[in-house]
Length: 445
Image 1 (spheres, helix red, strand yellow):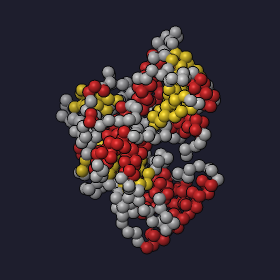
Image 2 (cartoon, helix red, strand yellow):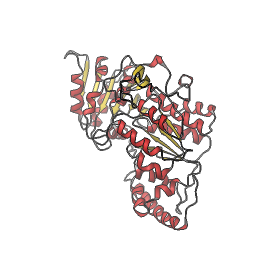
Image 3 (tube, one colour):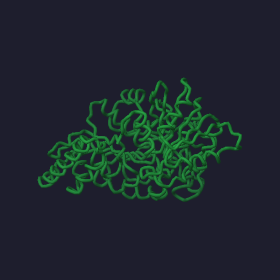
Image 4 (cartoon, helix red, strand yellow):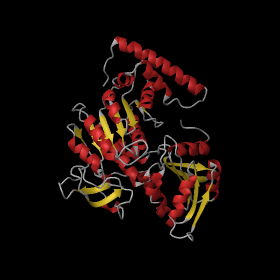
């Protein structure tokens, strides 16, 4: 943290930074995008060690946030807490969480000489690249949010990723603090194996148990011995209160009592994000009053339970990019009295090209409640078919509208939304960016 850089490294770094900033200026001036990835890619070609050279200048350390769901919201909440205490924070707020995106984030806070002047760097990191970036980043804190199946065409099973994480994290300095999700058996086990200081976050609220374990559950077997876990109850997917009757493995004890912490964001999944950020903030020495006040006044990250007002009507965007996340956004929708939902399914690189995951989603719950379901996106007919198969009979009381043109689909969904209700939009990642561009008239990336 805050280490000095050798003179020759400083020269190479300064040149790389100058080129990267020139590229950023050109891209943004020509309105070609936000330049959230390209500058880092170019800078790394000039100085391959740029991630290491920049991260070691962060005064109080790097905070790495990894997991399948919740990274952006958790990172933004923690960033907001620290900024309210007057700290300068570098943060990949656009969600560019691969290596080039991380470099670009740090470059944005660097002067032309390659000097980085920030107190903290909060970096959300794609779960698959965690092993590659831990050594150069040398994070002070690692938040491990959850591991679910996501983008099956790109990633392996969750236990494979967890084993890779454990192997690399265990080689980090002893002073590294790791904060895993106690309710995730795989991550709870990870934390119990590490030699570093480990804090856990999780829920202790039986009133929020699901009625049954979802059929899209990812990991209900003991990560130690492989025996089926006994669940007292689950909160979402395989996250819950568990023990192994075979070897005695059990859920780790969370640092914070979850029932004592409120949340302003919708969805139980956001309670996990709140607890993760709060646990990290307390570890960094932030007072509880500031943390609680920030939580109670927090604005959602774009596309993550983000509320907008369009043509006088309320719109809520709920990113839905994998089975677990989509089941949770459907839970939010079905717990409301609103009866119009727009689902937008894309299969581009940021989404994952394999959309078979929609058959693991409990769309039956969405269909059972009735109302208007508008479908759009690159794979709209796949989603329409999934919804049709969710009907118990052809006499179902849903009004299913299939619209290829996204702009028209949004307009149609708004037309079917009464003035006193909210239109819920459930898009995949690239679809979310398109939806926001239509609704707000501007691009995010």
